[in-house]
Length: 232
Image: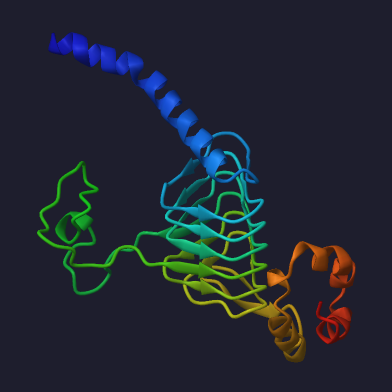
């Protein structure tokens, strides 16, 4: 009988998984009617979304809050992240991966310091002795290129750009372009006074009517004085 029950579980597993994923996607779309989904995605119930978000094939979003119009590319994994508005996360990006102790602890293995029991459901730890996961903050209008990795606990400022393949281990200032392993500042997108005006304008918080009226002016930083002097 045990063998029969085990065999039935194996046979029915694909069906159960399919139904679970299908109902999960239906629930996600019901709660977020303006969201666009492309293929199968995995989203935790604790995640929250704004308007018109886009999740591409095979992306995973865990315990994350995402602002209006932001999107996540295919095969990306993000967890414990607050993402601003109008932020573009490319494919194969990893944000908020777990950390391991590299000093003082004899071993880097979580079985000795974590109650999460990642090793086959087993742990020797009677308490949580190391903070494995930290919250990350990704600002508004940020572009994160393909295959970038961003360490948990890092803050990416508004308007920043993370180059493809970069490994970000430290905070990134607003409007900085960073790249490399580890990521370093390559340059800033705009001059200091222009960045200050963009920060004052906070265009990402404007309404749709403002965008319809001003989207062409946003095509050149030279128009920033006009926009800051005529905020609708």
